[in-house]
Image 1 (tube, one colour):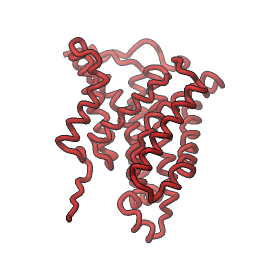
Image 2 (cartoon, one colour):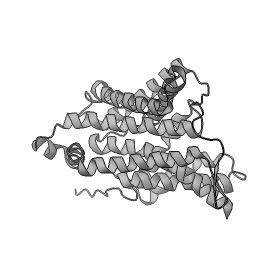
Image 3 (cartoon, helix red, strand yellow):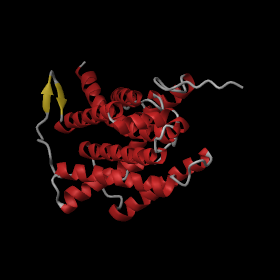
Length: 293
């Protein structure tokens, strides 16, 4: 029983990070309709930016976090303006290929600047873990869940109570109607990319805190894809719940199936993805579109 509780707690923490990475993906897709395959690369890039600020330059960790997220926000606006603004109205395949090419560029630049070595942040939290009811909780995992929860609440408040958030919701519902009502759709596109990139960077920083800063975080960030499919491509709530479900399933698979099926922990999210696509392609909270011919 204790092992199950330990696996669930770890899965909740990791799943919250997956949900955060998926949240950036959903925000970009809802507003622009672009499937951002490069989301994993943006997650990895955020962790390396924070490492540079905190270790190389010597900023405090809290300031490094803010600086990295702010820089990622600006990068997102540049990405939209230079790469995806010219792709408006182009075939979907061309846009997806642009995201794949952008992912390759991110990975190449990361290797050129930081190489493929493993890095770690300076010690931030106490090494003595927290124990509750026999479940051991490291400070990194507890803070990871807290920061993710903060971002979930912040994004929910932003979309529900701010004018820009309401405009982004309007664009996600109907771009033409929103434009006719005076909403600057292109500006909303840039903001969506900026917010999505900033959230991806935040997820990468948290991943770096609980593990290491390395090139493989790009693959971990890619696990946002099954999370998004599970929750629904257009659902923010689905991204959060989907991340938690995938995180818990992945950790339980690692505990109970890894001794018999080596590597099942890393494969489990994508097995879930295949099953979801077969049973419920639009996800738990996605919109099921009905087309009449």
